[in-house]
Length: 476
View 1 (cartoon, helix red, strand yellow):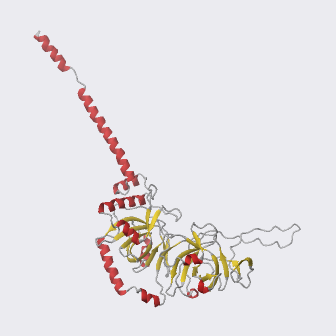
View 2 (cartoon, one colour; view 1 turned 180 degrees about the vertical axis):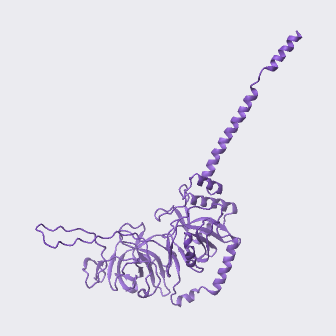
View 3 (cartoon, one colour; view 1 turned 90 degrees about the horizontal axis):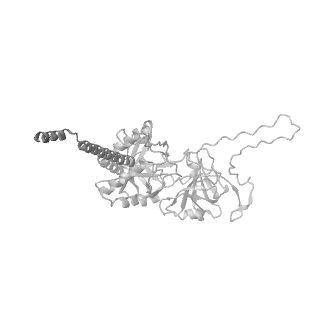
């Protein structure tokens, strides 16, 4: 009996048990679930945070990230255009962690070409003076081109580092043009200088890293030279922004103070009585679109044919101004004093010279449009535009229409007055023509309607109280 009991116990001990294997399989399945969940979260983080260096490089290997692209001025991301003072007021109160979060959002939106953001892009506007220019290197966020450190003329507490991405062979010329003391104006209608980073210095100043999303062509308004920008092929995320670090910033501020000691800025009282001085200023220009050549008319046959001749229809160029002595008057369009007006095509850009007949041609060019095809904007009369003098920088697109009389003309510029008023009651309108255009002759009369306006660039009131409107031709 005891042997049977003992044998039965031995049989039980020899039977296999499956509980251990079930436990191991459970652990393995849980590990797989955890791994799948981690991969799922990781993919969301990688695609959602390309500003992280590892995520950016991983997306590059997968070819899931695009290089920064060039935007057209009519298709730029929606944004808010802010002056230097507004930029400072908005971001100066933010703490360190808040600025870090804001910088991550700004860089992420830039890398993604603003496809997925619903926030308004902050654009910098205003007039800035260049302190120093540095060449970009392979260790910077943008590896080719130059970066300029500039200070706001109206609010010196605001600094910007403007990135100009260009091929390496153009760097030397860029540094020569972007010299210390040069003024550059960021306008709403011509520049989309997007803020991609904000840095707070130890002395309380704010430095904004800005990149022009248009990557356009720039030239010196009162000087010679021009250059074009190209979007960077990639962004070197490992090099953290800002590009100009604290030691270089302190050194640049000391060098600029020394520069101003030897090149002081004239005060307002002296500038009011002094003769106008040619001060170079960097502005963005638009290249003229190529125009198809007009075919020559078919010459008549050598001998007459019995059948009626076929007249070849060819395109004709836009009519230019005809001198008043030979023009055919249009009785429907006359000035207040009864002088007839004839249609004329002309244009203008900002200049600040008292005698345009003595000014050399700049050879500048910008984009022109067919009649009625210019970008949307407000169309005003000379009196309406003149009322804006003294109101600060124009941050919207304005067009000028009306009847005009030419009082002076130069190589590529002309001075106009409102033809319906005496000269002393009309704003002074200084216009500039694109390269290759011929300005009107003195004393000519013409009219520009809303479909063929001038684009207003600036409005200023001189020390003598005379209002000067600066505009340019944008109609083909």
